[in-house]
Length: 480
Image (cartoon, rainbow, N blue to C red; front, side, top):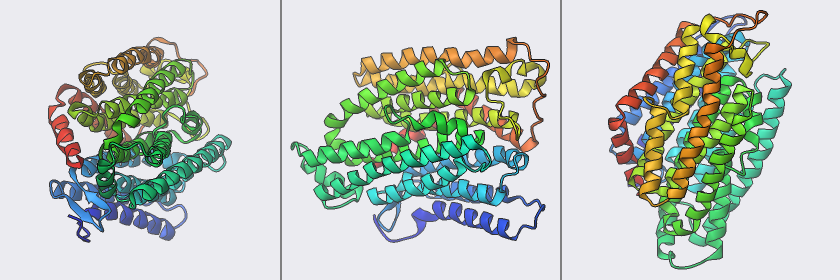
């Protein structure tokens, strides 16, 4: 199974080559000349998507540490969708804000390469390297507006806390190696299965340290402190990218490590993750209600959605495992579209991310108001959107696994969250626009096409989710 072939790394190489091409195009671009650098990224991501489809059911492996199993390929396809939508939304934002196009697109693509590597890695050290590759790129993207003090502060906070969490993760890898004599997940899993009846403090220490590292990346309580500041300070489209892509990659690695290698010790880590999931859902929802800044509100919404995903991880039954992958796709498309609308409504000098900035949007940009409404309804889990289906399966998994308390907390927090989503809808449709308020900018055809595609996915999967759910179920079964 672990032949040193290159098949499994083809999707990764496509994205890396696209990133290098973007850097080269920027180097040879004359001042003031426009080049479709983002198009290079879309070509690379398309190559990654096509190669992932061709690798389906082959269980290819490269160098023993990169596995192109169906689980990793499913997450890769989700990341391809995230990358394409991000680039399409960014085309207008990059020109408007005079961002360095080559640098911006290269960083986005290198971050996606790190995410793909993280989702397909079969070795803890490779997961750590992938985590650092995507983290460094996202740190720079957060502060890419060098003249914006808030962006610089957000990047600095994100970097410091990210480095702190990386140390925990690395120590967790060290303890795992000390116990199992390997960092390969298959070998770690085999060793821990033989030691499942023991109470080794070193194994528990490794579990705790790895859990801290993953919890930071998915913005789980109490490791969520960086999220609101980083989301508010970063450009809106970057916020959407890191709230979806980073979370998808981190949850993929989280599931591979804890539901596969450390599954024999699930009795030890499941109660802790139960508590983290409950606290994450409660804090993300309760604090989100008090926010008047839309990016901070969606930041706390992102924290709450991380809690919902943890519910599927705790349940760890067939429904819960499939629901994790389905929910990742649903959340990624929905949240990225919502942040896309925020980014497109902003200007170079003003983010237009306060709640009052959306007053009367229906009268000035009815199409954007309608698209934003669909996104918010999906985030709130209302039918007939994909958000409703995702939450239904997550909570069903918790009930079928006997975690009734966690399911009740999830349902209640989901109901409360509808309040702050509908508050934005009410502002767009029923509030009067300020006389002195500037007219929202027009949206390019590329950006509208990206929004239309996202809304189509949200509604289609909300009405006909069965095929993707079956695919998710078959995909995650390949790592167990």
